[in-house]
Image (cartoon, rainbow, N blue to C red; front, side):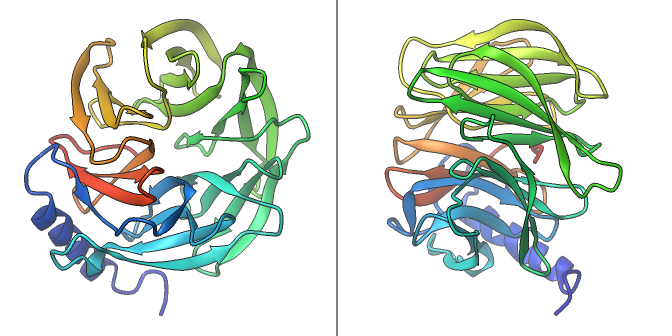
Length: 305
């Protein structure tokens, strides 16, 4: 079966399943059973066909395909191992490229890997011994990647830009900021004029002005917290920022001006990352490390991958 075959049918089924199970906005329900993933459950991403991928199913160093079309009102989607990463690699964040490829933050082997989802082939996109452990990724419409890179032992972190080469085959690393705490969640605004980066242990979110070439400027504090941790982040199409509050079990939603709009209560506590999906982009999938599963809820405004 080709990668384009049955695209429409799958999208319709995915949309119907998510809508039936999650008809009430901001009410979280289970996508999978508990204990399906490892404690490092992370990196959800939805491709153009509506397929949901998550890292570390059954064992670390894998990527799972979550068959949300099989929910059938049960909240227990089928999960299968899609690929196994090269020996010594463990994935964290996943990000979808403009040609359907998926970039993988390989925190164990200091890599950014790339997965061809049609051929199920994985190759090294960029490797650097200067990486601590690439954690989270975001990508612009021009294919520029940004990577958070924490050093948990020292409570410090870096922010990297990875520029594609002229053929898009490999990347070139540029350090953008090294004077940071434990960098973790990272997201671009929909207009790609802002870059958000959080620091998990310091409980801060920073905003940078961003130009078309991926240069940053005007670093300023966007939000801060007095308790619990911070993990993955994503923006909706209105520019609102969704932030996983690790240990608290909520998604905090901020306006582009930094005002907290709401907190969305989850069933588990250790929410590690999230992504938007569904045919209309209004289904949010959240990886839960304490429950080793995925939850989801519906929102009013569609989101950005």
